[in-house]
Amino acid sequence: MIRIVMLLILLLGCKQGKETTTPVSTVKEELPAGESKILEQKESLGTANGELQQQVVKSLEGLADTTFVRLADFSRDFAYDMRYATENNFLKAKVYDCAECYTRVRTAKALLAANKEFLQKGVKIKFFDCYRPNSVQYKMWKIVPNPQYVANPVKGSIHNKGGAVDITLVDLDGKELDMGTDFDFFGKRAYHDNLELPKNILANRKLLKETMEKHGFWSIRTEWWHYNLSAGSNAKIADFKWKCDKD
Ligand SMILES: [Zn+2]
Image (cartoon, rainbow, N blue to C red; front, side):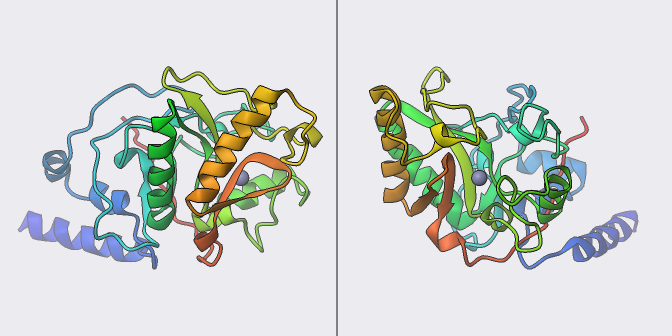
């Protein structure tokens, strides 16, 4: 009887939080603790600052393109430094409760394909930012209400649609390739069309840009780290929020 009541509470809880795009991980985490443990055994590889905790690898097969997924659940081959979950960003503010990298399935598939190609060249993608809930966009806008640096939350950013990522490349030891500036450096040195840079920097940017473009992403002129999935621009602005583990 208690089980039935609990199930009802869970079902009602699910309904209240339900959006058109159901985050897979949230549904899974709302299962009773025991069952959740059987479904998935977490591997604790440690969580520090902007780094994510890695979990068992799952498959994207059968998931709708618009579903939000946590990339670390589908590959162990990405690196993370989620800057907005720390104060180490241009806002000097921590706007995420915890470091997570979510995108829509469509974006995740393209990222996995691009990373496979990068790995063959001895490098891999490192994320600075991924899907950004629209409410976080409002938070950022409140701190820096300037469209030159932050997209107006009313119109939204492709980050709010789960179709944009901020990335760099690292080698297999996790060392960043030199891209000429840090993430979120706003100035000419970060521009794609600034060719007055050392050859190795231009070569690193070229590798990143050409590979991402091959997998359906396009870049913006002023930020070497930002990539939009072409097919992701038409998705809806979302405000799905990921859960932060309290343990
Ligand atoms: Zn971006």
